[in-house]
Length: 358
Image (cartoon, rainbow, N blue to C red; front, side, top):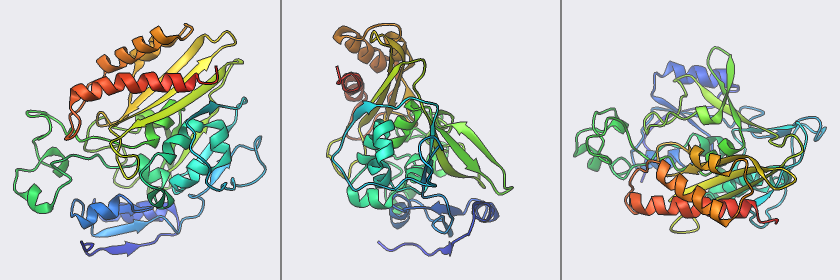
C-alpha cells in the first residue's frame, strides 16, 4: 500500500517540534523509527497531514550514565551478543538516562544495560525481529498505540460500523456495552521499566519539562493510551539504581507469543526481587503486559512474596494470586481464560528466573 500524502517536518530542537505539534491541532504525528506509525498510515488506520521527525534533534539517541560510572558523555554500544534474561544489578546511587531515540537493538546490546538492568536488555531484545529493532526506538515502544481487531483493519471495514471509542465514537466492540476503549497495549519494554522504577521526561511547546514515574504515564484505557498532551513529547527515560541497604536485587523478563519473531506478546512479565543476605524477599515488583490497556502491577502477588523466603509453594501462590487479581481483555487468538492461566505460568517463570543464581 502507498502512504497517504503528508507534509514532512524536521525540527532542530524539542521546543520547535512541540510547537509544530501544537500548531496543527491534532493533525500531526511524531516519527522516530517509524516501524509502527508508517504501517498504520499505509493501512489508513492513521492519516496525519503532518509528520514531525525527531532525527535532527541532538541528544535523543544517547545512553548516559551518572558521572560515577563513566566520564564519557554517552555509552558506546557493544556488538550483538546472545540473549539473556536474568542477572544482578550493581550497587550505588547511580542513574542511567536513555534518550527516546535510542534504538531497541542498542538498548538490548549496551553492556551497561546488560550488566545493571538485564530485564530491560531482555525486554528490548524480545521485540519483533532484529531488522525492526534496528529501526524502532525505545521511546516509540513506550508510546506504542493500543491494538484492537476491530480498529486495526482496513478503512472500509471500519467505515461499515458505527465509530468506536478508538475512532472518537461511543461504542466498544471488544467488550459489548463497555463505556471505554478496551484496545490492548503490547509494549515489551514498558513492563520492565515500570519494574525498574523508571521515570520519563516530557517536554512541551512552552520550553518547560516534567519528570514522572513511567507507571503514571499510561491512562489505563485504550484511547488515549498515555497522558501526553497535544504539544508534548517524551524525550528520555531515567532509571535509578534499585539496590539499597546491602540487599541484592535480581530481575527477569519473559514473554509468551505464538511466534518468536515478528509477533506482539500474548503476555509479558517483568519481575524484580530484592533479597537480603538470608534470601528473604524485602521487596518485589511484578508487572504484567499485553493483557489490558496498559501494563499492570500484580500488587497482591508482590505482597505474597515480601518478608518471606521464596520457595516453590510461594511461587505457585503468587502466580495464582496474580491470575485472579487482573482483569483480562479478550483478544482474537487468546481467550480471557487462557490468558489468566498463562499469567499464572509466566509469573512463576519470571520469579524462578530471577532466582536462578541459587
